[in-house]
Length: 421
Image 1 (tube, one colour):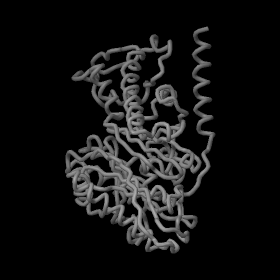
Image 2 (cartoon, rainbow, N blue to C red):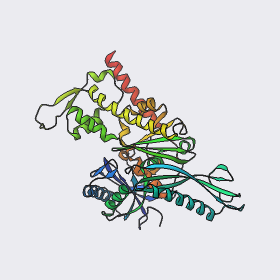
Image 3 (cartoon, rainbow, N blue to C red):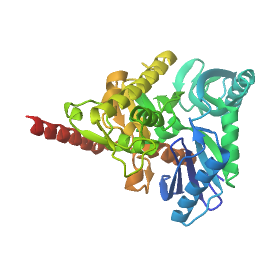
Image 4 (cartoon, rainbow, N blue to C red):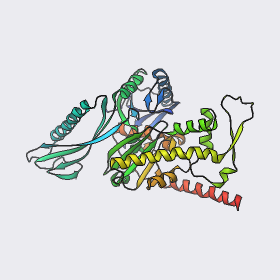
């Protein structure tokens, strides 16, 4: 049975996040792509910063999301492939060489060099108590020092080398997530770190080859992956996300969390405009009933709360990239995914802070998604399906999405000028 597939030939992806739990059930098409036939979503409970903090609450949310997807698909699943954003995923690179004595490279040689690389990392892992390997990805091969070889099968040489990108995470976080999913009577086919999954669904082939940084801005964490020459070469996580913005609004305006989230969605943006001072927003106060008079604040106050937190998040991302040394390697292209990247003006802010070209990424490699689930918030769940199928199909980026965003921005600016001049 292929990785991720249930007995009935379906594949299920489970995105366990801090703000939502999402399940996609898909069937493989003739061209190797996934077609989604069931979608389930539930508000997340018992999850904080990508890690389980309440088994019963998280179990209920997962069960409800999977059940909704099963009902829509008219099928049941017994195994899922799961994302991982908690447990502080960290990446490292190792190089291994083995002697092949001049003969052609065969499958056995590849297995031997990859096995030695994994054994070498296992020894290092023993020294890092409490860590567990999530991914061990070959990023390139070499023969007699000649690097940049993607497929060495059939080539001749004396030494065969491989560079491995290894991603590890805290064992406790993986065990707790595993226990929670198993309590739902589901087997786990594998784990995929969130920024890698998001990249598989939203990046195009040229971006992966030339160099790109993907930033997945989730509810509890912001995760990073860097691609070059078609491979993921670096991953990292910043423990700040959209929920922190919501909490800032709730504290700053003394309003319930649910109303803070609503205001962020309806009125939030990160690029201040003169009209914000005149526009007033109703802000229900904590502890007051619906019949009480609501408090009003200018929209500029809301923007003044949202902007600093998102600036801080992006500056933390920039610092992590600079410290890793992969900032320049990744080129000047950044792709944003995740629900928290949908705040208006964030793309422009990210471009200023990171000094790169930025676009919003959407799940382009999966068919059958409803319009409501084609946004950047669902890139991770869609990417899990791509990973499970082992199909990294080349796609062409549709520039019409960016054109629509630019048209909307121009329209808003024109409206503002007509009102004020």
